[in-house]
Image 1: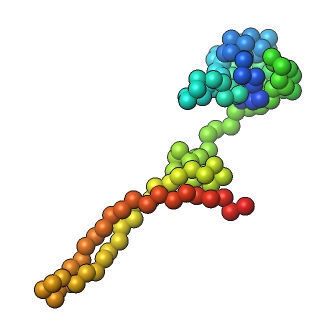
Image 2 (image 1 turned 90 degrees about the horizontal axis):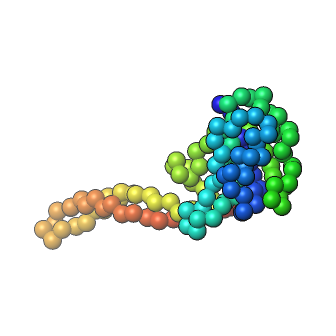
Length: 132
């Protein structure tokens, strides 16, 4: 199974449109236009799965740079997801917030003259800023 990335999609492109465009080059196992959770509209990219590598490569050559509903689409082999901020890395360019739990040891003098040790846990939110 070969997965393809399709970028620069018009916001009017449906999964059926995507499937029809790629079906010319061979069988399509799945067609998916990625939707925005907040507004329900297209995010402008999607994925196609084709069972045969030869058909997928023909689709890349035939469709990359062509017009689909008024926009020139980008077609390439999909790359595996790499980390990203959802898996623990920070996304400084996106200005994502990161929570960091820190522990402090605080020495306090008690009224009886002894030293009490108190462990404080607090949550600190940092706004990550891009350095450049």
